[in-house]
Every structure is written in C-alpha cells, then in structure tokens.
Amino acid sequence: MQKNLKKERPEIHPVVYFMLIDETKKIDGLYDSLLHEGLVDELKIIKYESEDYPGYSYMKIYNKNASVENMIDYLKEKLHKDNIITFGDYDSRYDTDYKGYDCNEIVNALQKKYYSNKLYL
Image 1 (cartoon, rainbow, N blue to C red):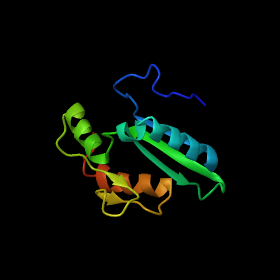
Image 2 (cartoon, one colour):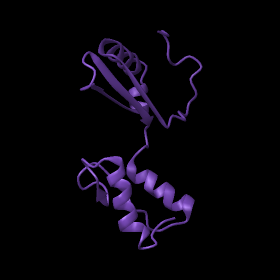
Image 3 (spheres, helix red, strand yellow):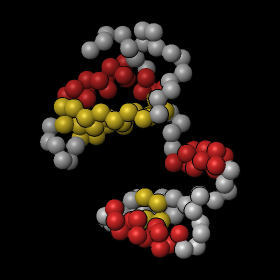
C-alpha cells in the first residue's frame, strides 16, 4: 500500500463513486490510511461488513457533495425539467417505493403508472 496518499494528489477530487469489496482487515486498513491522510473529511466514505460474504467488507467512496437531492437538482437543470419522479427501495425517500419487488415488477409498475400518463422524458 502506498505510504503517502497525498503525494501528487489534486486539490479537487473528481470522484463520483467507487465501490470496493475486500477482506474486512484490508478495508479497515485502507480506511485508517484515508483517515490518517485527511481524505475522510474531503470525501464521503462509507464502510460496512458484507452480509453475503462473511469476513469481507464494502467501502463506498463518493464526492463529498453526492446526494439524491443534489442529483435531482442536477438532472432538473441538465434536462430542463421541473418535475423529476424518483423511485427506489428506501421508505419515504422516493416518490415511489419498490422495496421487495423484482426487476420485472418494477418495469411493469413504472410503465403502467407513468407511460400511460405520458410523464416520460
């Protein structure tokens, strides 16, 4: 592992999203290195143990400003739209909740709900 993560590191981090999975001890070591170098304060870093792979953990690295709300604002501006319909699997965070549905059910429900009303882009 590189000892000095700040070496030749740009001032602005163009990170959008990284996801890593490795042994928990390696993920913990990487997180500690990022913490030591001050990158944990400059980026949004989330780590958690895998439920599917015992002994392994995930680390997700985002731009510090990454959020659902910021992406919605970006899409509204980029697409010149005032209304964005969101869907996801977190209760009350999105306009439509599809927790527990399989992919085909989601597509069918979206088509039935939005396509028939001509609310597509």
